[in-house]
Image 1 (cartoon, rainbow, N blue to C red):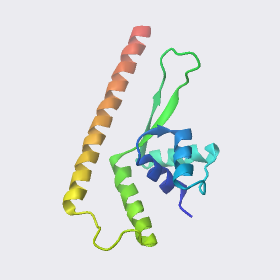
Image 2 (image 1 turned 90 degrees about the vertical axis):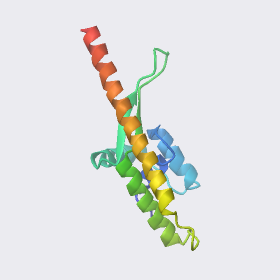
Image 3 (image 1 turned 120 degrees about the vertical axis):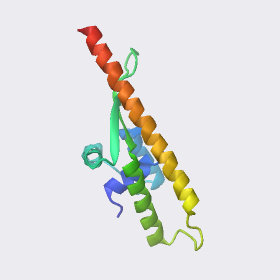
Length: 141
């Protein structure tokens, strides 16, 4: 059976999301065969975060009634590379890649440039979030 960590990372290839969305992605992709209990989901995500494969941030909705903060997760560049290796290993085991369909070195380099850019943008957003939070704390004090 596929490990929980790999399943989560493969689900995060589609983009950032929060816990229950991840559960839905995994169930949908596996046609209901793989199921996650939220109690096992978050320890696995924390483990991925400690391994620097995933990062998280909290999104607090505006002052809408009933809105609640959500913890979003996304792959880091290291996590994306690790996920690609796992995906290729699974595809190889299942013999899903037809002969001659390997990605060219140009395609791999293009993908890596996109990952580096995404990581830079994500880091910039985290920095901006920290500065905004610091200003809010200073303004509230």
